Amino acid sequence: MNQPLPAVSCGSTYLSETEVAVYSCILENQQTSRKSLNALAELEIPREQLEAAVTRLKELGLLRSHAKDEAVLVPVDPDLAAAALTAPIQESLQHKRHQLDQISVEFGRLRARFLEGRRRGTTGNIEVIAHLDEVRAALNRASDECREEVLSSQPGGGRSPEVLQEAISRDTALLARGVRMRTLYNHTARFNAPSQSYVSVMSGLGAEYRTVHDMFGRLIVFDRELAFIPDREGSLGAVVIREPSIVTYLCSVFENEWAHARPFADAAVDGLESVAKELDGTILRLLAAGYKDEAIGRRVGMSLRTTRKHVADIMETLGAVSRFQAGVLAARAGLLDEEPDADGADGADGADGAHGRRDGRAGAGGDEPATGAGDVGP
Image (cartoon, rainbow, N blue to C red; front, side, top):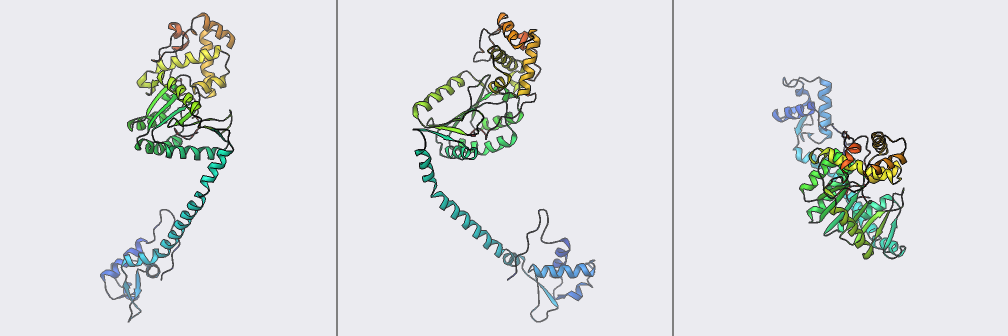
């Protein structure tokens, strides 16, 4: 039996062009010996390369010596040679598959005990998961077991292409099972090209997306029975909620926000000025309420740098030298009187002075992708 050969590097081949030419020549010229190969006109190969090619072909099992004359080279069926060469590899793969199955079965026996032990350590139907990898595992289980509906609120101006690509396969599987998916984003996601592409693809499969100017926070609910919310601020953990009254309340919060949200469209289609004015109106109200730039950025889904640019522009337009004075001037101008309505109209007619000169920076300028693991991620 042939010994298995070392694996070739990526892009390399087991057979060189010279070896293929020598094998083909021996097929055409039956009863060929090493010595007669040198005399064949069609093989313009130096003797050293010819000898190396014959040796290699014999190692691969593609050539053998004639039973009655060892000097004569006999070509071997490539299928037989490949079968002999790959037999040890196939045997190794089968062994690895057996190991994978064994690990899955034996560790799987502990899953029920682990989940039961975790439930015993929780207070009622509320569970805190501290580590991000365990949060993702719990979310993946919930996604796999989901039967009817996923509600998701994803703050932030956009997410990286890698995160969105990961979300596509998972969300496609949910939609293929007939699960309804509804997701809320900040308006600033409209200015994020990867988010626009992702929403376009998934909307075509039946998912629904809307955006709001000021979100209530991150939330994921499966089948109106299981909810995930963030752990304390700054933590990568999550709180898992199964208590029916709390889950129902969280669903009602989502539904209220959904009712006042706009269907997702990219900034060019929906009107850049309209969305930008609404964002500026929200920033102005939060500024007047005493929020710091970091908190404003989190609320509207902007990076700190972009938020500070918006705040500076608003203060300059109002002629304010301090944040307090900006709030006073905005109140006197009637810019804080009304919230935006469901159609996105900013209630203050005189708001153009503070909102009307936004030049495309509403969510795109320097925004950092929001963290998370996709629509069904932390």
